[in-house]
Length: 391
Image (spheres, helix red, strand yellow):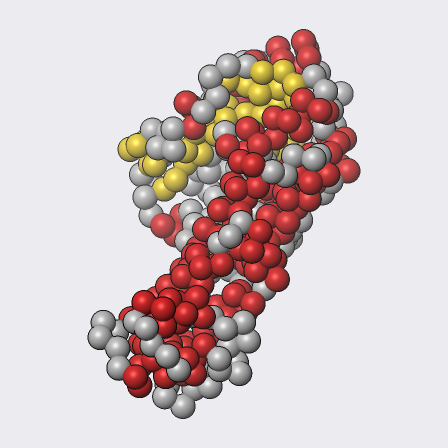
């Protein structure tokens, strides 16, 4: 049985997959197998993979019908024989010496997980780096740390989040952990959800100061898989990450102080991302449906409870109203739309000198039957107080 199984899922990536594979083959150790998952590629990727496998007995290629990336992860994990598994995407690279250093750590500590740093680099289409480690991830972990018990892992979990270590799959995991908790294959944040799922089963872990993974962010936007696009599941995905993390910390009696503040602030901030993606060219919803989606987000009980427990009700309203303003700036509502009251609400709130008619429009919009949770009420009440308006 090899010590490591390296898994690389590939779909139509004839341009970069050789670079990824070579970064593994040049590690200078022998105790590993390399599984390449061809996810139904329609370019020259299958032939390239087979050619590389023919030249190196450590490489095994699995050809499958297209199933998406996380299904490829799961299929590779099922096929793996190694005690530990590391996943490398086909347009990224493993840093020189990484496997050798992880071998040393495994031989000394045998942890359930080795958390490894991912350095994000901006690069051109030839993988020439134009901005090295632009997120300064290399500065976030200064020393090796061994977490020798489940309690130490749990107490360090929030630090791992702040260090950016437990939000992706670029870590070394014991295969048994990965077999017990398969990746979801329905959202791009399944790697974060995977780490949440395994958290209670991690008894020991090692935080590695040396960076292991080079994540390449390409200058052409279409080359970055999930960046800035519209996903209809985005709201539910963010909710799952938020509630899953919250439940973990509550079970560990740690959901308080900075941890509670961080997750509340993060979940509120993600609302702006959700609303922004409604304006992405990939989003084919009508303006009316976009407005309905913004209202659905505002009415969601997970969001409302998050705002309430962190005293962010006004921030919640502000983020939704700003998102609606962005949506209507892209394409206005028809005057006959059942959601036209949203336009009147924004117009009334934003006009500089308000007449009695403006106040009435705001009031009617706030208490409109389709505005079930009175979006804009906090600002309406402020207007009444500040302008001494009585109605």
